[in-house]
Image 1 (tube, rainbow, N blue to C red):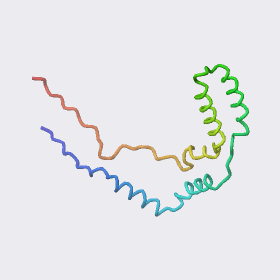
Image 2 (tube, helix red, strand yellow):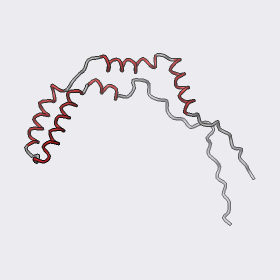
Image 3 (tube, rainbow, N blue to C red):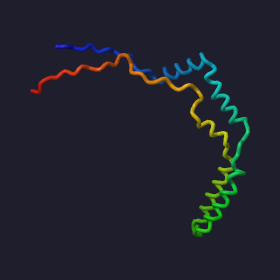
Image 4 (cartoon, rainbow, N blue to C red):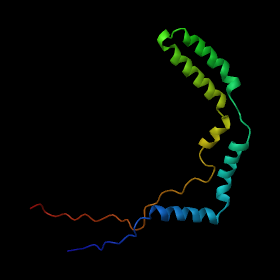
Length: 128
């Protein structure tokens, strides 16, 4: 009978150990924090690029056309929705879309199978 020796694997890292390892990596390579810090400073202190002047006339026209088909009972809700949309349009910063882009770093390394994983041989046993 052939018995395979099971290899003992280290326990998976805990939450605090993972966070500590991440902070250690960043503290050893300060350049890793410069891109997010620069983007935050640009968004907080940089110019506010608004789309209000470009899209506001279009939204007003759309709301005027849509108001004609709204019943009297729903008119208050429609006006609230219109003022909410116009406020959002006025406060939207076009530069905030930069925070949604993927990071400008190198792509992640391809996933590799751990060295301890090996296919198990299939043992055929007769069914009793």
